[in-house]
Amino acid sequence: MKIGTVEFKKYPVFAAPMEDVSEPSFRYMCKKHGADMLYTEFASCDAIIRNVNKTAKKMITFEYERPVAVQIFGRDPQTMAEAAIIAVETKPDILDINFGCPVKKIAGKGAGSGLLRNLPLMKEITDAVVKAVNIPVTAKTRLGWDENDKPIEYVTEMLQDCGIQALTIHGRTRAQMYTGEADWTLIGDVKNNARIHIPIIGNGDIDSAEKAKLYFDRYGVDAIMIGRASIGNPWIFRDVKHFLNTGEHIAPFTLLEQIEELKEFTLKSIEFKGLPGGVIHMRRQFARSFRGLENFKETRVKLLNLETLEDVMSLLDEIGRLY
Image (cartoon, rainbow, N blue to C red):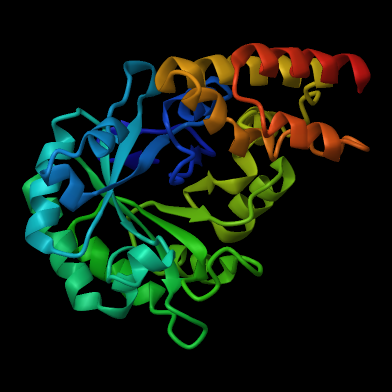
């Protein structure tokens, strides 16, 4: 599979762009464990043009992350084109347009998945961005707005005609948000549409190596994208990639190995965010770590209230001794 000049081996697995998650330390861990493609958190085109420091930092990437994509969102074609030019100055391999974010403050204002209710404007934005930059432009979207409005096949053809070079489809509507089950049937229909020649990346509910292989085989997608299942568990990419490439399961990390990984993750978070921000940012990861440990609720609550590196390392060591 190729996106522009970026080439991937068989069974590529991408780390989904997630706001407040896909920052440098998380991407570092995903890359370490085999993610084939990384994405930044999404960046507002308006904030990019205003040179808002927090947004500018979102677009900083590193050589070891390649291939890596910067993702942008907005609702005005000219502003999106101007922001795209600025984003490309950070030297990503790919520029991705967010047409899928379902949260009210984005979709409700006509950006993200809100553009699924204004396809002519989606087309204008895509045209403007593709013409503005000289690197591959891709997009990420959903099946449609709600159960009665799922224009994903038309949307895919339209975006392909605009010049995007790959499309990621999350198998839910905007109305579903992140509830219910992702519908991969429509993703498969898009992939099997004879008119579609760009790579199709499937996203939604991939939480195991077996499901990744099943969905590759059943729906014929060119790549899959893992999102929420990687929070607190970025080594899922290691497990999935090994199974896809060998047909065999790799031995899961022991508790002590997980603890060492989380220590490294915490140190990376502090490296990029400082103190106490780096520790506080890890709370989202800790909330979904150590799945399956019995009688862990009280210890998890402690872990989620720590603010110093010393306290985190001490409690992680204690978890290793007690469990």
